[in-house]
Length: 461
Image (cartoon, rainbow, N blue to C red; front, side):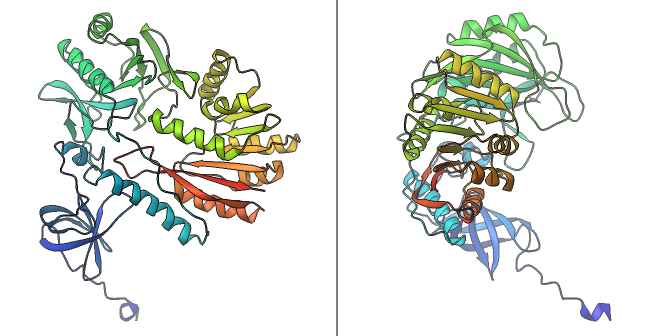
């Protein structure tokens, strides 16, 4: 009887390694082209809507499959011919073959679709972009591997742990690319080994470089499996000789069996423990573990926009939830009476307090705590805020947090999101708590050439 009730499994209409001709009709949120064969979706690397191609099927699952372009038969008018195919191969820049105006339009459309699906009737503005949407990242963390007997740095091939050595990362500041390249060369010259995760041997796990865009100050961090870095003094001397703007060389020790890049133990091998940058007129100290936005040009636009939408008054009390090293709090501090910041990571709060000190900001109060719990505590203590800024992690806000916001009852809430999908979910819940969504929603292209989009929304009581 059980056999009779079983549904017959429908076989996929294609199989692995088959080459088929297909038309691409859409782009997924991961930047893959969508083609359908008898209703069966295939996700195609480096394929754009409106294109027709011979595609090679690389993987077939129950309800969908993956493919890659073998030969383009009809090209999209929005296709950009890339000289650097590595940007696509490694997944560093999955939208690099799509013309930048089309990227901005696609990101706006992604946000519009989310609001439409949630039945939130609000206008979405055109995406704010960049004049030069390449070479914008102020930080790189690149893996090291032994290839042909020597240490190489690069990026992993998309969906694998196979390292592709590269000198240029397309979306990183040229000074960051140069710092990674020079560091790799120096490590090779001194015969330093890369860590092998399978054998558990070797020294260098990752090389990190970060630069203060406004100051030019450069930091190099060598993430090691071992507590001792062989030839440390000679390595530092060689780096100093070749990188004139170098201000800090740090060894970060990470002995855990983990995919997390950085450990918690830092040793200053030379120079300062932190470099300095300037954002919207405020100075920020950036250490090896500091969270600091990687695209300061659009971050300035994003925070300026958030500040304008808050309609701040000198008498206002403001809360900056998920405040990190205090960037939003300190951006608005001069325009309000008091500003409170909360962030779970204690080191970030230490940075925020130090940043307040060096900027002579005396009306800020930073607390290391879980944001939802601290919001509830502030609500119980009777703290009333006129404006709340939220810039949460990708998972968005919790119900506890939203309940606390409802109790604190700010007149305005400015939501800065790195994940519009969770933002839309949260906005619906905030509307249910008596807030009105004020349009338009503003998408901001914080990460050009990638599928990520930031957005700013405002709610009023």
